Image 1 (cartoon, one colour):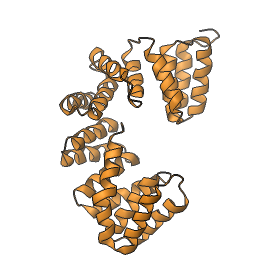
Image 2 (cartoon, helix red, strand yellow):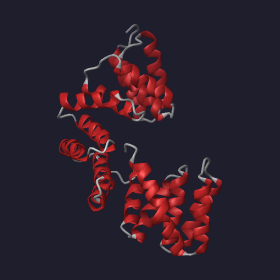
Image 3 (cartoon, rainbow, N blue to C red):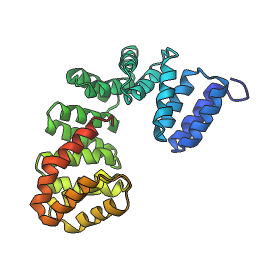
Image 4 (cartoon, rainbow, N blue to C red):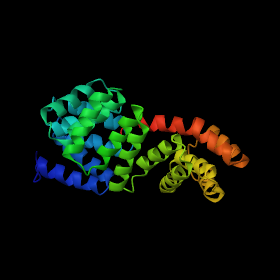
Length: 283
């Protein structure tokens, strides 16, 4: 690359920005570097990560697509770009992720990302093989434990899934996404008070997540906690754009009726639908 900074320095600086959550600056730094070296697989891969964090799905996909078109052989690049493509159902995702896992079987991210892909493809024995290998390689990685939990849940093993989510949250107690999943599993297991504790906490940590607020409100009402139920409903009504109006209306009616109505809506409709949709997304 031209200039005083080489590619490694540019990448290191950009990744450091991402680690601080400065995604716009990271994307800008990588974009400037790509003006000079437009087909660099590493720059494209990490630009895809930055654009994804910014919610620029089209730009993220384009970067990951261009990265894979450079025929990378670095397993880190294959694992990251392959997972990026998988979010857009690109058929080349499987090839990239499999190549990463086969070429670097001792690389945790390669095993993790391939396993997560296999989970969403319904290939549970193969997924568990990859994810259990990732757990052996990186036993303190909460994402690995959460993905194992998702695999067991989707395989129809809620108790094993719950155990993995508990391990994930012990390692990363601020992971509100996994906490929602654990709360929804507890709902399925009819452990409503425990479910309410998890869902109310997660909702308070995700005030921009309308569905989480409604789930937390229903769980609180189902556990007999009217105060938190009304608090979370108020946030859903007035603080969140894009709330599902039909779900909010149903939740308001159920919570206004009695504890059993709120519990029934959460267990029969709202909870299973939310769990299914959230499990479909890599953690």
